[in-house]
Image 1 (cartoon, one colour):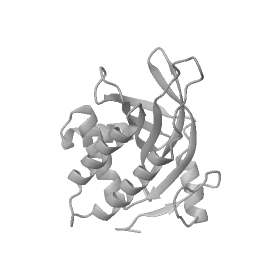
Image 2 (cartoon, rainbow, N blue to C red):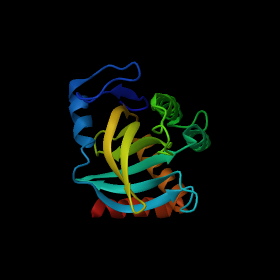
Image 3 (tube, rainbow, N blue to C red):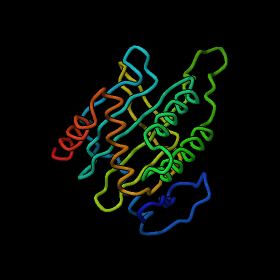
Image 4 (cartoon, helix red, strand yellow):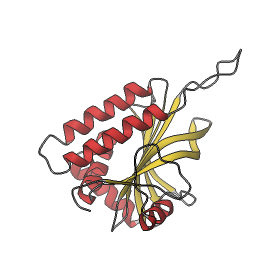
Length: 206
């Protein structure tokens, strides 16, 4: 559905926004979210390795390329706010994709509000970071965006995804998804848009 974004839910997930479940899309969404055979092509810490609030990853998931943003931050609201500012700068009013951007921003802010507040056990420091997973998935026919809370593991500075928590799945226009993948990679890896496009194209050929 070009120029509009619609919400759909995989059968095993729970709605966090008003949505209409469409069985074929739901099945496709569930398949696209299966990360069992993910191959990480590249990774950049955001905003930097010294001040890590998360990371942007280029993933190969079967035949699909995924731009994955994994946030783990004590100031998640501020981090999401920075993403929103970049979205609005990249998709100004009256530009093609602006309406998709606004729907994505609304979903992102809702997902951030839905994250349970991290609480440490009494007498311990614990992990007080909030965790949020965002994926732009380039399916040839119907690219999607999936976002929501996530459980992570961490060993020797390497963060792994253990389980998604009720992801919200959006189906914006293909042009919005693919250009935003380029913009996200360009920003995180400090590349030009042409260099970011080349890096994503190389991932698709892997």
